[in-house]
Length: 226
Image (tube, rainbow, N blue to C red; front, side, top):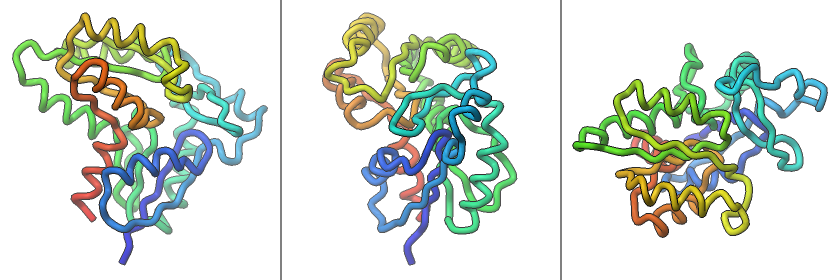
């Protein structure tokens, strides 16, 4: 019997781009169902979900692939409702945002890609003088991310760029790659579910360093459990 994977996004659904990246890591025959926190939110309601601060800011896609920033705190109750509804139909759920890790008390297993990826990084960081490169989807998140890795005793260089602009025209990438090349990280973490294989492949090609994509790591874990 096919497993049914629910994908809950903080934006609008379906996020077929995230589904496609998961499929690259899952070699089983599965079905997907989708739900998004902004599916039923109009423009006026969207304004009310604006971030309270930089540390509260999340980036996602709204209608017509419009890139928007919303509040982590204000979106939580909506996500609980979406998870509750998907739990009636799915066998497991992927939280399609690396910024969430504390949506507890669910009826079925829920996978938090940020937690999975960060635990893997922590296990990798026992190398002497380990250095981590991190790429966020918005500069609002840089300081928060720097503090997080500093508290974990990991030397990290954090950058930001949108995952929703083609890498061939996004002028941030040459700057990021040049800086990371000087920093010489042991690993680069693409810390956004909107990051895709094209971003991972670009990093690996230009820097010849391993790159960690949250969707692939999560897909690999799921693949072992179904």
